[in-house]
Every structure is written in C-alpha cells, then in structure tokens.
Picture 1 (cartoon, helix red, strand yellow):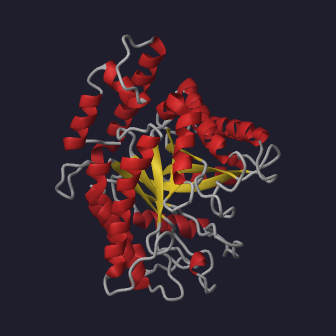
Picture 2: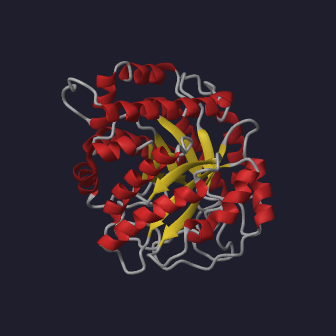
Picture 3: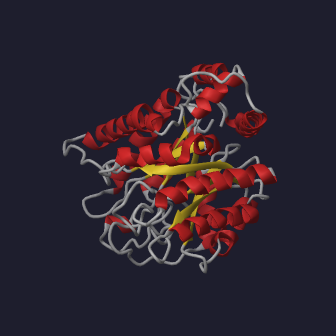
Length: 404
C-alpha cells in the first residue's frame, strides 16, 4: 500500500540496509554477518511487491486528515449471509445485477474498492474455491473492482492433520485459479482462527486451525513467488473477541511459524465490531460513538504493542480492518448504525499513521433477511431487497472523502 510522511520514513530507514531488513522480518536480536542469497531474494521480492502496490495506489494518495499518512483502501463484503454465534438463519436470495449496481455507487472514482468475499475448505471432497465463487469473482473484476478472498477452514470431520495438508493444497489450487487475474489482489488465510467457540462464524473451533493458518500462509506465499502473482498479498485475520487464550494463540504462531511464517505475511487483519461483539459499551447518551472510538484505539494499541510482537510480527507489516460493522435490528436503529460507522471509520483514519493501518472493510452490503427480528440477520447497509439504509449513503460519502 502507499506509504508516505513519517511512516514512510520509518520504513525507508528500516530497509536502509539488508541487515536491518533481515532483523525487521525475522525478529533477530543482533544482525547477521552476511545475507544469504535466499534472504536477498525474499527482500527483493517484497520490495518489488511494495513498489507495485505504491504504483497501484498512487492515483488516490492524499493527506485527507492532514496527518501526512496515506489514504485508506476501502471495501466491503458484498453479500448478505453472515456467520452467527448460534445456528445460521435463512438468507434471502442474492440479485447479482442489483448487487453490482449498489457496489458501483459505493466506490470513489479513480480509487480502488476491494470486495471481500469468502470460500470454504470442508474436506478433500469439497467444492473448490473456483466452484464456490468463481462466477462472482469474474463479474466483480470485469466491472473493475479488486477482490480479496477469504479461505475459511471448516473441515466437515472437525479437523485433523490430514485436513491441514488438504487445506494447504486448497490454498495452492485457489491461487492457480485466480492468481492470473490482475484484480485478484489479496488472499486471507483462515477466518478468526483465534476464536474457539463459534463454529458457524470462526475457524478456531476446528482441529488444526492454527496449523492451517501457518501452513496456508506459507503455501500461499510460495505459490505467489513461484508463479509471479506479484499483485496478490497474503494475510490472516484476528477477531477482537477477548478469547481466553489470546496469548497462547500468538505464542503458537511464533513457536510453530517462526521466521518463515512472518516473512510470508503482507498484512494482518482485525475483525472488530464495537457495541456488537466484545466488551459492552456504556449505555449513556453519545456513548456509542465514544465507545466505538475507544474500543478501536484500544484494540489497535494492544495488537501492535502486545500481540504482534509476541508473534514476532513487526510494525512494517500493515494492519487491515478486515471486518467491521454495526447491524440494525431490535434496539438498534438505523441512526445508530450511521453513528457507529462514522465513529469507526474516523478513528481508523486518524490512527492509520500511528499503527500502519492501510485498509478498511465494512461488513456487509445487504441484510441476510430483513424481516427476521435478529440483529445477526441485519448487518447490511441495505435491506435484503437492496433498498438503501441511511448508512449506505454515509459509507459512500466516507469512502469518497478518505479515498483521495
């Protein structure tokens, strides 16, 4: 992503010599005496990828908030179905034409707008990612959108070492299918592998999820390098859900992934839903906005200062807000959705320089089923009939303001 101002200076200083770059990527306490060929090759590849990302981002570069930090790359999950803490509810049918028309209204002219979509590994005999989302991905990219694909790990047998190997093959197969498409720009490996109690929404419940995350990231980067899919970035996400074993999760990534895992990462995602999941916000006038702001700032700070260093992941690896939303529903008005959105986006934009946050994805475009009296069915900026809620226009305006 485009980096400028103070943050760019930090990165340029960190890459001023090979030894320092090696330390940043591998977490060493003292510099190596000599860089080996494969280390140089890795660094050269990363510099090439970053240069191409900067070239792609250059038309939208700005200092919109006056901080000298780059503009944010926005996007959205364009569907309606959402994972739930209990059984998933029914979902109204998608209308591809109306969906695409709505997405066209959200993106800012001349700026990338990334569609965050999902495909799932269920086992050796399951559908491929191309079978699950190939038609949608082709439609989106033909219309000029960039696509980020999440590969979830949900083995039907609950998870096993064989599934971890199978998932790595699923990752390689997905890249073989979509990697040649220049608008396929990002791959997220697993979904919320740190959350162990929500099998309908998160991967952490399934056996081997952490190993699938590590092995999938490494396999993805190897395939990207081998096939020169330089536009494709690789990352994983973490849900700010207060899981009991947070330190264990990040320590496991450090212990089992090591330098090879860290070197394969282009970004780390954060899923955060203030006022919906996580600690309750104060029930006071104006507390939704202020509570949202405080929750996001606290999460970004804790991630950068505690968890990522624990895994050996340096500040040079950007953060994405890979999911963020506020559903409507019982006791959740449409005005509250707008208030939460403006607070969330404004906080991320203000904090992007300090924490190296480059991307923001809203969850999601339309409700799963607007008539169902359950907020988990009403995350959308639109109803299930593609009628805009006020937040649709608010997000359109925020994207236009902060994308330039």
